[in-house]
Amino acid sequence: MVSVYQGVCREGDFAANLAAAREVVKQARQRGSHFLALPECFLSGYENRAAVQRGARPLDDPELQQFIAESAAHDMVVMVGLARRAADGLYNTELVIHRGRLLGFHDKAVLTPNDRDALGFTPGKAVPVFQAHGVRFAVIICADTSYPHVAMAARLQGAELLFAPHNNEIGAVAADDHRRWVRNCHVGLACQLKMVVARANNVKSDRPGQIGYGDSFILSPQGTPLAEARLFKTELITATVTPEMFRGPWVWGDWNDVPTWLRAQLGQFLADFRRPANEGELRDWLENMVVFHRFTPGEVSAATGLPLNEIAAALRRFDLAGKTAPPRGPGEPLRVRPYPGGRHPRLGFFEGAVMPQRETKVSVFAPWDDGGYVVIDVPEAIFSNLGLLYLAHTHIPTLWDLQGLNLPRLEWQRRADGSLASQRTLPNGIAFGANVRSTATEVRMDLWLRNGTKEKLTGLRVQNCVMLGYAPGFAAQTNTNKVFQPPYAAVRSEDGRRWVITAWEPVQRCWGNEQCPCLHSDPQFPDCEPAATQHLRGWLSFHEGADIEAEFQRIEGTHWRK
Image (cartoon, rainbow, N blue to C red):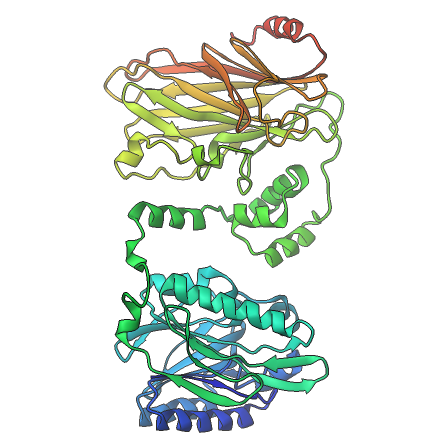
């Protein structure tokens, strides 16, 4: 038996709210309830910072401890909201009380701007799951339900009951749209995650233009209401939950039917960010992303894992907000930066490059005003007589994928002369790496491979990709704007006045993928004996002019292949 309470919270009046909670507990016990949830911050208040501060209490507060102790008189799990004072901040907390003790609590994980800035709450950092009466359950609070992540974290830990306390006070004009949105979010969580979802909201209408409408409910795993409270009314609603509700034909599809590969890939997607280790790294990456690559806040979040409010604060702290890259000075080398991730470097054929790895990718910025950048993948792939040794994204299984081995994440290293260097050692002892060095007119690259096995390596084909999607004028998804004259591969701008040129030696194939769009001059390492090292030479440059053949000849005159 599950109950949720919809009622009035007295702002900042802890004693009055505690008395109301005791009365609700009494009513729920009379109904034989096993679980009771009361609204968000019910004991403290939620209207403004002053009310929250008046009603906030630490866990060792004597009145609160007495309320917890009283639960020893019954077997019902009681969940009630509190502004919780702690040594490290103020938390929006839902207490979970059972049999005379605090079973645990959930701190609201996804704070709204009002939670954070106006009320002064600190975000939670865990999604605990509890067990009582033979079932696992969890609590998530208000805005936590607007995203799948918090509820999914509970479901992945085995929770089948999900309690969602709210404390909504919405502008009257938007209240009905808000009510529909919130209800739909809860229906989605119930159906998709196969959970009973119970919402407990407040009712309130004493502020002009603001209303707390209620709309508390208990939903089955089908998303259908088992019990619903009336709008604007104080009441306790109760529903019976049975094991049969979680099985067919009441629900379609089983949570455990999701294939292994999809679960693993979803986990990788959710963790496919790299949080800077310290303030220095954070500043460098933010400058790289925002100033040079012009990332949006969402793209920065995808790359770093940081929430939007922390990104905005860091940009202000480092004086990077609104900054743009300074003009390149006369004779200054072409700008080369590690590619940050967070924004897919392609414009198409995404299915052929799932979760691209940034440790092989560098951005080379065009020398023209607002010229954007191209992304070089060096290497994108290395093939051999042993199989696919390396792939810089998820697509075709590598030797290591087939063995269930994950390669560690790496980063480019910047040397004292400004060049970038990378190095990776594979599980079988083969090592490879790249060096990227720019001048005022070109970027020169060296790709090396060392054979750490006891057998000769052959068929060492390499793919090195130049992705064009973020270079204005070169991003058309076609190959009609490209010239392939091995070892050179070049792409012409839409106005016909500019070119991007790449080349590798010794080359085995020049080509382009119009969907990406991208440019390839793919080389091949000579056969490599044990303990030997082989090298490849690479080139990238920009050109203004119509005669590309003459430019190829000029590049040849630089003797870049040697």
